[in-house]
Image 1 (cartoon, rainbow, N blue to C red):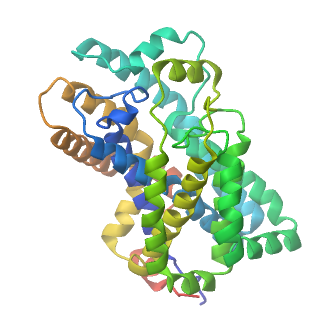
Image 2: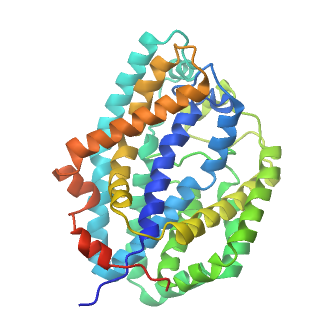
Image 3: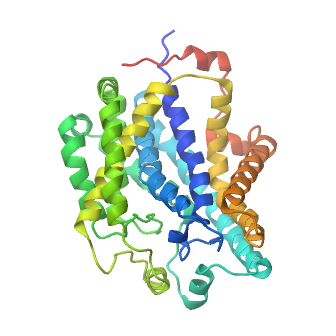
Length: 393
């Protein structure tokens, strides 16, 4: 019996990208750069958390959408277009519909509880008081809403076989990745804040299509032309050097953090266009995004392309953990803000407690329930998974 190869590094990268989101959002509370825009901003902070958050932000979600595109092409190859869209509606759109209202209710409760117990409220609470009719945000679940849109468009694209194959062949060529992609990202992000914001509105945001949508297509192209991954892996070292060097102009040109007035205006209008646009920092950001996303993808291919029971369990749990992690972090970080602990110890406690609660709740409430089937599909026997060995081509 013929079985399709299992790309274990894709599973492992997906879970790492999601779990890195827990670390990213935990770090936002302890970096002074984000003190005006994050719920649990703590007066005890350190600039190192800013550097980590801004650096990881460059590739975390771009990598996720490239992986999502890879998985989309794989699903179409295995199940056909209709099977693909049915799967994505169930595994992506339905969790968004279920978790979005629940998340909003829990967030409102957490904010009210935090306001009551904190000795010193974060600056963002001032924004809440000033904004009368805020634009609805999809919060950290924006990736599900955007991914649903991309999957529906991808489903329509695959119906036109010639165009589908041509586009996916073009987007993985060296000239496209090295020249066209940075230009496309610069155009897409030109009118956005630096660092780039989340496309968290309910209405479609075209800049997200030119950014995450293009990366989604590249991921799909890498599935159909997987020999390109093997080819590009040979250049991992020089790409890593370019990625490291790209941080120098990016951090040097980084604009000052947004003022409270700017945050209030953005909350009222939903517009994230800065007052002054510096094309050089946008270009530096685009180069850094392309290089660091490429480094992360190739690092996964080189060192994470193996199956283990632990990796499989973490991969399954990561979806659930990401869905619930922001409210959980808030309940942990609000009381921590009243302590005199160092920011390093606070972030360690916040991450450790969130991960522990996420794993325990996954095991007890999700893994063997209908919710686990919804998020991760039906379980397959370990022997079958191990038999689906990954090939390099």
